[in-house]
Amino acid sequence: MGYIGTMDNSYRESLWDISGEGITGEKKSLFNIFRTRLDISKESYIGLTFTDKKTKGTSNRVAGMDGQFKFKRHFFLTYQAVFSKTNNEINETAIVPAFSLAGSYSFRHWNIGISYDGIHPEFETSAGFVNRTGYHHFKSKLAFSIYPERRYLHQITPSLTYCKFFDFKGFYPIERWFLFKLDFRLANNNELDFLFSDSMERYQEYYFRKRAGGLSIRNYMIAWLEFEGTLDIGEAIKYDPDKPYLGWSVSGSFWLNFKPADRIRLGISYLKYTF
Image (spheres, helix red, strand yellow):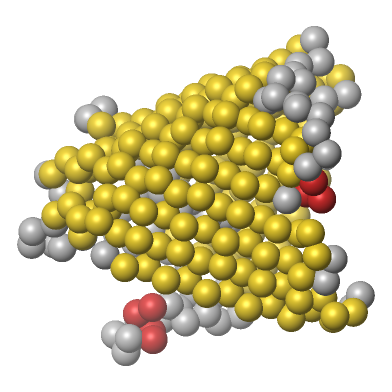
């Protein structure tokens, strides 16, 4: 069980202040965060969370519960259900939800997972950060690992992943993608991955179907030099607000990390994208 409460008296400029609109920033924000958790077994628990932020004229409260359950060593079930209510100088929202449910099975050769999460368009958490709202999201993954037990090849893992986003209220499709990945684990923690994706994305009133392929390399064979690189080729959307269209894109990146001494590291990275 834990509780944190604080009063923030510092002045923070808002974007309106910076742009010269003359609207004052936030002052004297009161934060309250409460968290409690009950361990049922070694890797199973249930928990409750409550956050509260109050500023002059505005308030945001979030409350909910979460948990994780482990069954017979290899099965996991996790869930979270939270609700928020926001009041500002413009309007006051109703109590709106955000929730998730996920199950997985993991063994030596098999890795299977399925999950669902959804966030109401008006959900907000002032004590945290949510980068996307207004959707339902379904995801499933199937992976099978092979162990050749060779000197330079330790593991081969093909996997399939499928996910789909729906609008929270209208339930019409927003985005869908299918991913096939072939992962090779080599000696000295080196990796080589091949990927192929088939996806659909809704932009404005248009639906675009995209296909792409790529590879990634992670090389740690030299103790003082680490290297990572990616290459992706495929279809992409030109997000023109007047007339979006589908075209071809090529993107590549690499990252080098030099370690001339135990306490010295020098890194360099490069990214290139063309459409």
